[in-house]
Length: 134
Length: 340
Image: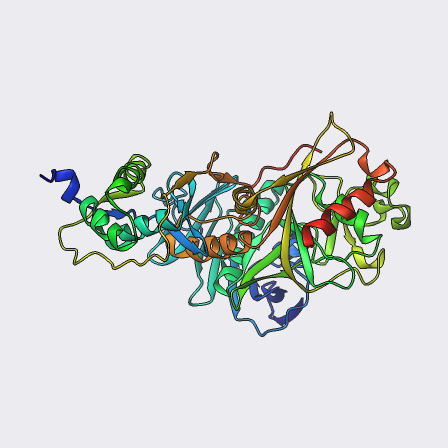
């Protein structure tokens, strides 16, 4: 039986920006200033949340990517990580069908959080860093 | 820079070409132009394409009422808080100055409170202008990167040098210019994707060199003859191609990144490879990314796409490294190896 958390749709927060690379993607949370690297399978999962998807919809889509039931714990763990990092939020009820995401080759999905957030207070609009003492 | 208009009062208009942005500035009080000329004239690299002009009015009175809603959601700088309100950028300074930018309309207004002889206020107004230029460059499709660059002779690929101010970007750059390398600049570069590939372009032709650097580069002569860069530093604003003619380039293709660090207790030079995530981390920290998703997205895309194509290394520079024999050879070999 599906729980409510399986069918509740999630969507990337509007202040989370992403950019696609040849082997995955980078996402930056403009609120926390942390950024994350995803491999291509991780990005396929995250991409579902660009337009909104539930956990069960992501798991269903993953079969088209080459994943099987044994991969579900890893997919769930990545979704849990996105929830814990507050990269996603509950979506409204007016969403249509989830986006159709394609993936060439399935691998274990990863979401790597970079250790240090970007600077919150910057020297100028050109120079993010604080100068070292001369 | 050129004066384009004058009238019977002291109000005057000046034009500054700043890379891909042209500022047409109407100073209510021309004395402010004197204070800001050093900043506005430093972005002097030639630019190939016609740029859209931004009209700026600098007003000394009628500062609009303080807007308490501005909390720095767009950017928080040491001297300014910036928010995006109804499509306009509004920045307020700690000393009461204020700027409103309407980039799409090509105009901005700066309001300066009365204590106009305050040096700190001049620096605050400079920061408004840096913000205005950063937005204008981004609007023109270029991302400002706080990085230097080095290009080997007979090559069009560059190594980006990333480090906070004061870490030695300029000194390292100078140490290789005297060996025939070339540069786009010592700490200001514009970056964009051109047909999917990164492209870096020069913005400022003058270097910020500490007079002590003359110890290592005797051909530079006494650097104290050059004007001081700002009151906060001994560094001088040096026309670098007068020392090493032919060393300045306009454009190059980024192919490697060096994260430069001081190593006060270490050997003259230590080289540590860094991998993809480290390169991304290093480059992202040299770019100011605003909190507005629509403005952040193209910058993040440009930085991430560029970083994914770069080989990287950390170079730790010990004390008196540039006086040590063989260090320049090792630096040159390290940078060359990143480009192969």
